[in-house]
Image 1 (cartoon, rainbow, N blue to C red):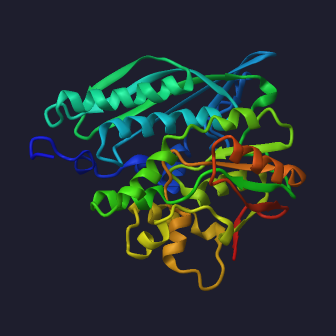
Image 2 (cartoon, rainbow, N blue to C red):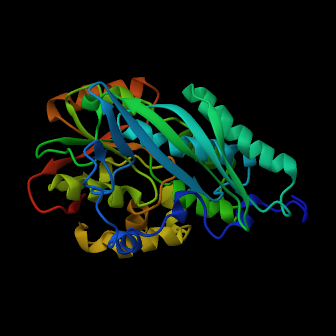
Image 3 (tube, one colour):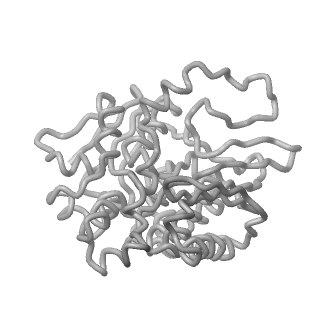
Length: 349
């Protein structure tokens, strides 16, 4: 790009869900906030760090609401818009709901970006919402020093279809529906070191809607769902463990990983967010002896529009994996299990 039209990633100090505050910082900021307990209809609030808020309207209907926005992790404006929109919609799917509309959240350095670049970002978001079958019905925009885009999303579901991150049970199997490595790939993009095939792989994953979550929530054998985003697999698994008061065991060798992620991580393409994540929750994770630091960084790697982490009846796990794969999520794997015990994460080779 010309000097007048800078790369999108050059305008941001972070990108994607790697922009999220570290879990420990977020906990400190929320520590003095009042609990929303007086509201009987609020089924899901901030108590377990779940993916979205849920408000029960009547015996048959719940409203799910969430917001998600970040700075660019890719230089293509259209792809940036698509990734940001898919990531925001994911929170509704992860709760077992179906989105019905969205509002755009837009902050752009209008003196640094040409109009057509911003238009392409907005078009990407609109196209993903069209794929989801919903409108972008409005929004809000500001002039900001760094490019920011995302959505506030409203969804609905039946009360019995709500799936929290706190419903895992001892004996459950764990399933992950997308590969890991988004943050590592985005770090490589920053330094123009990601191959075209790697970029294609990342875009295919990050723009794939997690709509399978709404279907799985109809199955009584699925006990808990959360999406894996900025806190990495370890961080979101730990939220599930703490909310469910169980230990989660993850089998390192069973994890789906992007094709070039291990090689790039060993070359040092790791985000600062991965290290911040580990510093926030590493004391609650048991790693196998001798695990290299780059592999640990991969497990804490911030995922943008990552996959769903699912806890389900072990007798149904194989059939559910086959169903999810057949629905268009080829990286889906059974990655571990839930055990009775302290809420920690144990990584096994």
